[in-house]
Length: 384
Image 1 (tube, rainbow, N blue to C red):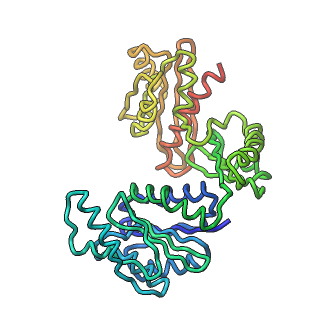
Image 2: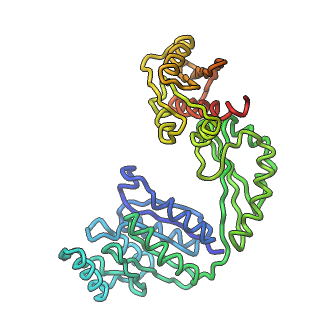
Image 3: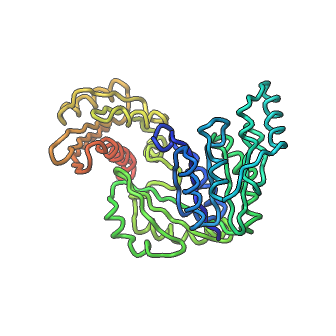
């Protein structure tokens, strides 16, 4: 199985001005094609530093994928950097210039002289026409290794990766295996508790099991290499069953499932409606529930932190005014050593009060409280 590294290029990425979505897309594409990804690197618009990053990657892997820096301006240095890394010159390709001019004509535009820069590629590279943009991409083969250079525009990059690069890699490296990942989402238990329950499974080699902690949630990741999707699922399924048996009800969903979706589904199934009062959460709990809709009738943000009695009265009043079956109230009280989370859950025939303490960084307390609240809703119909 070949190995790869991704180099995303652009000072705007390095400075955090632009979110690097390309690396995420490329990582998933490589995984689905059965290619091991070893590293992801971000480099600013500097020819020497890009060349150095490429050379270092070639010392470790078979495939180097770059995105960005293929525009027509002076600060688009990727073509020259690849040539420098490979120890060759850049050369003008007349056929690429014709492709670029043709593309501009179709757009009803006239290329400027600096667009000619996009017709230069390293000696020995072969170009691939870009039907969705002006910059051709190119691939430079170095014996058993390849450097693949893609544009930074996400729509162009993803199109070319799917239509051109993946088929090339499948043929070049005779790819047959797939890498499949399954995520089990948990809530209500900490990373150390989960590790204590499944630590022996984290030592497996194929499939592998890993943990990713979030604020109030932990993802359990199963990754497997196999000859096909079907073979991969045959390896994943028994391990997933074992994990579910050990972790129990704290597993709320898999892969793309969200906690708010899972929390509201049983309410909808039981014909129950819900409203929310929140204080100190910035409106995020309301936004997440509103995005799902269904049994969620609305929410209100309280700017002054209420006592638990005040929170209960405000929640019940809001529930009755909206003719909802359930009312949830959540408030965060800051403290020196820990944040105190107050929760009240009001139903027609009962009221539940909870006080929970969060000892992590204060900026993560709202997300922790939101996940605790959604888990409380999720478990409501389980416990009834």
